[in-house]
Length: 297
Image (cartoon, rainbow, N blue to C red):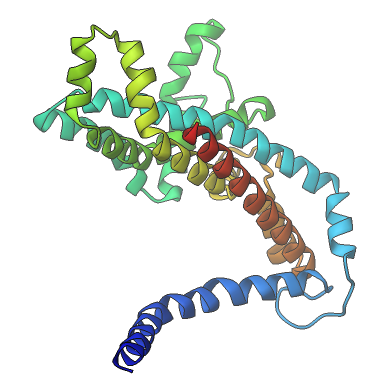
């Protein structure tokens, strides 16, 4: 009887400890998600009820050239940022890990400081940097164009790569910290044993460092994939400041913003948001499982 009583007490304590997280999950995530899906099946405005239309909103948006263009831009942005940004962060973290003392802290701070800036400040800074009249980057571009300035933020060809560069510069600090923590967790004894075997740097990296930090690499890639699917502020603000053509700066989140807040089509905006949610969920789960399975080989 005493064992049963203790087990019940443990269950009650466990339930009390878990309850705040469960309540927060239901209130902040589960209920809004359910409301979003329910709204996507109606023709409701942003605020207020609407009539049931079934899957009409999904069919309309999936066949919409605006949504298709925005989805392609989003996927293009992901290709430009997720893998390049992750491996650039790894390369920088390995370099910082070789430093020590105040120099290491100074270099790490230089890479991390941009991540504490709000996106409005980041986009304004890069609008100035890329300005065709006085932008610093135009001097570098001029070396390849014969001194001619290039409208990198106004050109549909260069806009999304420019947004990718801004995003990597802005967010790379957090990824560097993750990789740096992973590198520091590797025992020095492993590297000493490799040195005794006269292993070169590439062999040390491919046989020791890379396998040991693979779980963190998989985590960073997954987090980056989720974050970049939800890109909104960078292309919106950079496009606004630079007067970029609407098609060039369109991503899935801007379609949601345009439908829900500008056109007051809450149902259609919720349908696009549900599609994006499903894409992120499926893509992140598949990627994480693939990377995890690869790491276990």
